[in-house]
Image (tube, rainbow, N blue to C red; front, side, top):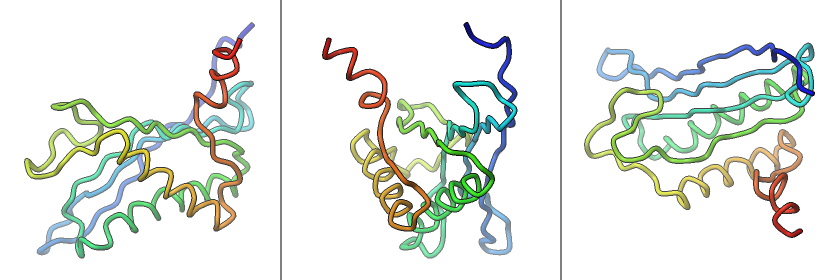
Length: 150
């Protein structure tokens, strides 16, 4: 049976860049940290539930690199603090939905499933080569596939 509560700390990590003299928020992610005092199954796990960005980062060619580094640095930080597992929600919003920012520029495209999955996998592979991530899996392979094979 499950505990009556799961102590959690929620955080919003953001990136600002000064553009034409104005601080502009360009990237944000909501994370939930279940620490050492949380019972299983969430103990020492982090959940990156939402990640959102606006395409105004300058210079534009470094946008993916910087956004990847934001998440990789966060994963390194929580690993150093004793967290052992990170779960990432990698599903693009439906048309008209926004995750963190209430609106996006009209010319900013929403990535399709396969493009977003590639974005996350390339980020995680980089983190793995840096020794931050030790294993990459997904919900299907980890929890559901064995039940489907029965």
